Amino acid sequence: MTPFLVYLPPGARPDSADAVFVADRFAWPAFVFPAFWLLFKRQWAAGIAVFILQSAMTAAGGLAGAALAAILIELALRLLVALEGPTYLAHRLENRGFTLAVVLPAPDLKTAEAMYGATLDDLASDPAPPLPRLGPGRDGVKTIDPTNPGFGLFDTYGSR
Image (cartoon, rainbow, N blue to C red; front, side, top):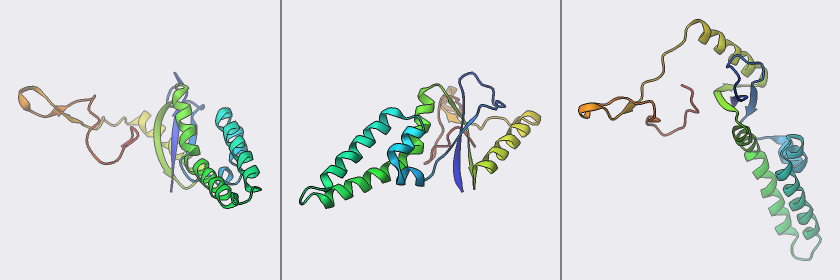
């Protein structure tokens, strides 16, 4: 299953059709064509930087004794873009004011969209209460504290 991050534009309601789905997985097109993939995703600065680095590695590959180093650096660059490219896209959305609505594990985009639509229908008909979070209370008694992120080893991305 692939985790799909669902982002909403600034000021949009959860049932907005403008939700953006970002698949948090290895991107094969980003591995094969890293600079073009970044440019296609409108990540101009990163795409140009990767293109310059790829050009430099191609030029360095022709030098005596530098071919193996150039190949390894090129492979590392491709792996970096393929593994962290979707995360970079998600951070760029957050910097533009988008908010993370939910994280959905799904096998493909169509299923993730259907699950998100079903989630919205369920929330409209029966809203679930928020999860309790333990925090310091009066007289040393633990109470619900909305500012405390709770405890656990893994980030929940705001979902349950």
